[in-house]
Structure formats: structure tokens, C-alpha cells
Image (tube, rainbow, N blue to C red):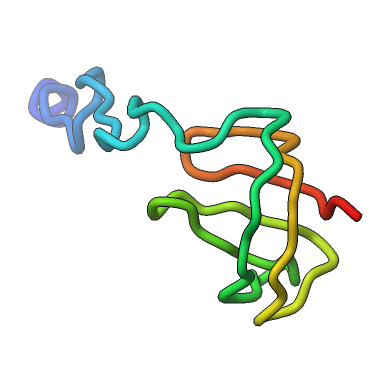
Length: 86
């Protein structure tokens, strides 16, 4: 009985990790870029959210509808973070 329990595995244990193809694509912004953005949404954390070619950029201290210039401070596979340039 113990042997039966040990031979059964659930899930994809030891399997290959799969990443979305967008994970490896070149991002439309780079750290240090200054871009003009229109904030279209507010995130759950309260940051403004804009998109460049579908790529999400979070900008703190902005409101929905704001059109701003932002300097990109961090680029990650799923999104970027920027700060308002005055």
C-alpha cells in the first residue's frame, strides 16, 4: 500500500517552467527613458497605470486622466515603474 502512495505524484513536479512569450520580448521602454503618458487606470495600490504598446507602466502620485512626462526608474518582465518629471 505504501508503494502505491509513493508512486503517485500530483502536478508537474520537476517539470519545465513555462513563461509567457512576452516575458522575453524587448520592452518598449528602458531605464532612464522619459516618456509622455496618459494615466488610464488606478492600480490596487493607488498608483497611476499607463500603457505603452500594451506594456504596463505604474506611476505613483498620479490620477486617472492625467497626461504626464515620466522617467522610467525600473523595468521588469511584466511592467515598468516611473516617476513624474516636472
